[in-house]
Length: 312
Image (tube, rainbow, N blue to C red; front, side):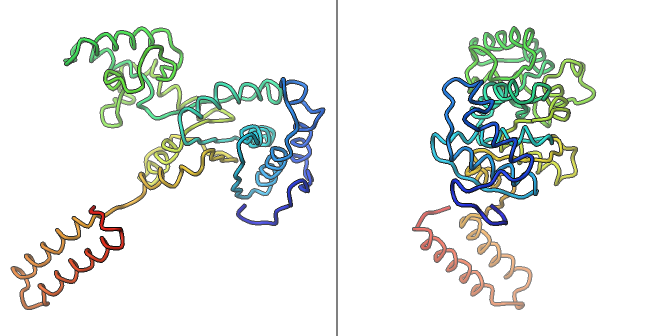
């Protein structure tokens, strides 16, 4: 938790109106006990749910770690849904993203918030692009006849699907090379000029996300949205009152892929050689270029030794 005291296990008070509502849901006679077969009160789940409710109301940041069997998904979903504000949930994997959207959220929406609208949003590579699908079917060149057959299956899927989303496509392997022929990239998307805009699966998914009460994304898409905002490009994700990172331990590595910068020891050695060559040719008397280049090379050797001798 970013700030504030923390009650000992079993001592957290429901306190606020949201806390009381959350406590009632998880009670032995609450709505979960009445509606979910096999439900049993778990004190760890109740404690986490009340901590989430407290963080939402302040508002504040909360870092929570829950062991296996705690029921962490319901522990953050219940207070988030009962809070009444818009909610954005980000997961580390698309598997959990699908589970939340297709299983957990519908179960809770049925008993807690019938009128709640939800949306699932993934990166553009997960959605069929009708324009590029037809273009490649008509003019594409394929190394394998199997790729044409897969594209035909994708065509049949797109004709009946409401979402055009890859996880719903039957018989299409996750790594099928033909899938890339049926999707768009940021570079080749025609945007508002596309003749298939009215039926664009990605456009519809983004519209639904902007309007929904609860949006489920993944960490890659969340970071991509932040990167686009930094570049001054329009936002993919809506502004929400509550943000939840599930599988948050994966977030630092994914964020590093989008916002990190790296330099290799090989690049540093190249720099040392360029420093020596350009210094001697363009400003021979300005510095001891040989000593400077040698100092850089020595620093690289020290760095490699500190890293266990690994190159890179």
